[in-house]
Length: 244
Image 1: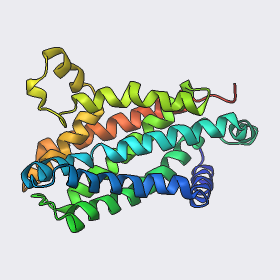
Image 2: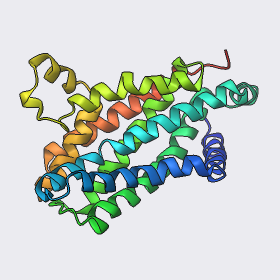
Image 3: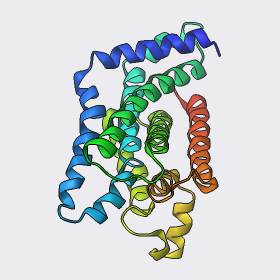
Image 4: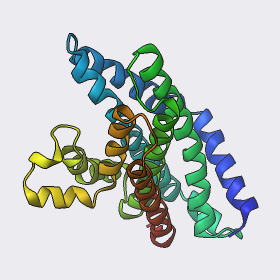
């Protein structure tokens, strides 16, 4: 691994993103539009809206970054870019970390915008303040980036990469506690959700909304999200392949 090569890879990816307005729109505009849509879905029900909206920050950044990263990484492989890079003195870990850093920066910018929208423009009350919420949104985006990098190794086309969204993300979305409390689910679904990282991303956002202090349980949720993201990144470096 070389920090210089990793940084160069991250810079190249960021430059590509800056010249892709459609991807930038998907990253920055779509999550904000969805957050605004939620407000009008629960129009006239401010209590429900204020409890659900922060948890969306544990879902939307993760989902969007998963989709963007999996497709972008797959495109690098199918267009032969990865093959050309591998002829140079760059390791798979340099490649994966470079992508992770680039998309983590984008995820941080996305999270900053979405957090400002929720706390500022939509005026959602957050007991713990904006910083823990921003931190949780950034970690959610980072987790989505890591999962996208990992899943891209198992797809051969962009369509197949998109197919992993309902297979991997939707089950977590249904069982993370966003729609219904996990205590009310079947016991085997509770056990399933205990092993899913989105559960801890959503739980962290729920705690940020209701708890005035940074609790040990909040730290526990954040640590699990980070640990899963790093573990998946390592797996991504091991499993990523050249063009088929």
